[in-house]
Length: 225
Image (cartoon, rainbow, N blue to C red):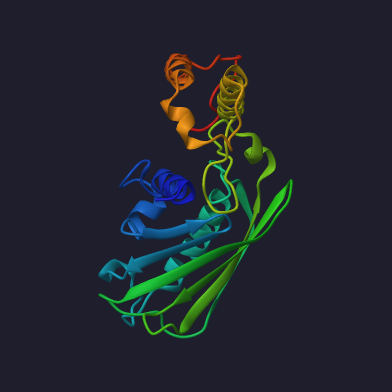
């Protein structure tokens, strides 16, 4: 599981189930499942239940609008934002009936733009046949959300980027490798029969000793949650 998917699922649980049974989302779509998340895009499904219907027996438009709100927020979260701001504009267009009890509604939320103050998202809803049943837009004021302490920094492939401490550790390891080479006075292209020489025994001793050392902590703390 990628770091992006793991983080987005955590955000989903916080939004929907923080006070389960008391909040709006927990009552409307407690069974929402986030299947995929990469930075800027989230894919989810919802199995339609009886309580999701309008009086003619199809999905209630209010459910679609609520999911536009929540999935748009999760699209922002997929960029590593723990708090996703507040809504400034939201809307939904209905193309065709979205389904009946037992049907599965597929949702794709995309972060179309993210600035210092505003985030823009689009959410598409399709049925199992791949037909578009509705689509929505959701604009959010993100303000100070970019500096929240629970945010994580994600790379474009959805993995967590190294923290300052991790980068320091990597530099320490690289420096250790350089020192080993200098102590031995050999290069990477040295003959393989080097391993059978007395110097190789000394190399092994130095290598093991340096591997047991703990990299120095220069006061950096892991910023991920």
